[in-house]
Image 1 (tube, rainbow, N blue to C red):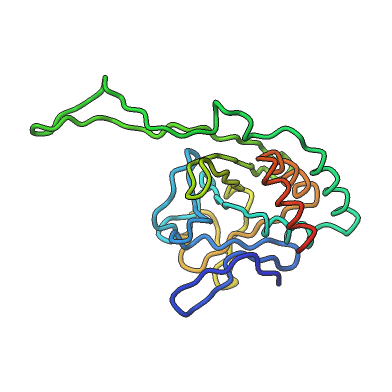
Image 2: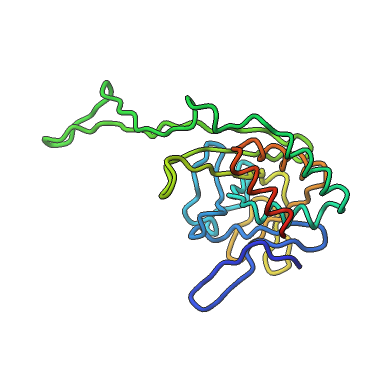
Length: 223
């Protein structure tokens, strides 16, 4: 077993994402871990995933890190394939961060559709931002990149893997769970990416920013 991420409950630590027997196991029961959530087709998150049923309309939304990507590469690709993918990444020279019109976030007010309550005016307000999304056709998954204000830099990139429930298997305490059953506690989604999926995902994410690409290469080399 190769552990990609752990989750902490007080003094208890559990494996949250891990690789075992060529599959990636992703814990989906815990909303408190914002790096893995269950979302609908519009990106709305389920507050208590364990209280919902398994539905093909849902997605695993995994905010994937460079460390996790590098561990996946090392465990699914041969040494020669890793060398090749590093060369391919290094050749990437166009980046999402360069698309200045699409990487900001702002609040938009809808003044034309206000309502009232007592002496208050109710003004609809929406957060407007853009997401760059690419389908990984072989696996049916998606890579999403979005930028939002960060604590350190003006804009920080966030990379997500979106994996449809219809492309996953599910287990709870080593028992398979079928569509229509409750997700429940300690439920894992099992993802079976192949080598071509992983290569395409890594190349796609490398287009996020030049800084991110360099950090990804460094992580792969040093992991």
